Length: 231
Image: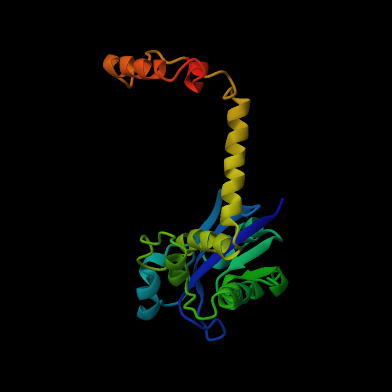
């Protein structure tokens, strides 16, 4: 079993070293590259103001976050969810930088780079002409991101999970496996029984006059006509 966690964060700004803090974490569990429905999502009180520029991006204000837990209150649940599994992140250095800044304050184990898959790096290799933002990749792969009016850690993780499968060229294989599984299920559930007879016969497709004309024509072909083998 291969377990991966697609992860995204929202913050008060762009610099963890400059005093910005986490305000939201969203995670989606994949097992063998398939979403399981198991998710982790939390809003975080950053214990500081939220600049209007950041609030315009994700819609999270200091007033909204005031009664939310601080990071130290949710850190254990977060670490228990991600365990030691691979993290799939878009522009991973940014998110990991903020997460490790918060974990360092708690003297908790840090997230190492060797357990992180950066989908931005994959996208840049696969589509060097770009653009390779999450919105651009959703558009490229026909993924519906109409709900993404603002950035949101959980929604962005769900979208990134779909983008990740596309970047790995695994969607077709996944669909084939799903189809094979469906056929197997049908066989086991009795789909191999004989087809039922029609409750009502289909109406004839030729008229009586056409049938008589055809018979008369066959008579003109002689005893060796091939048509007589199928009468």
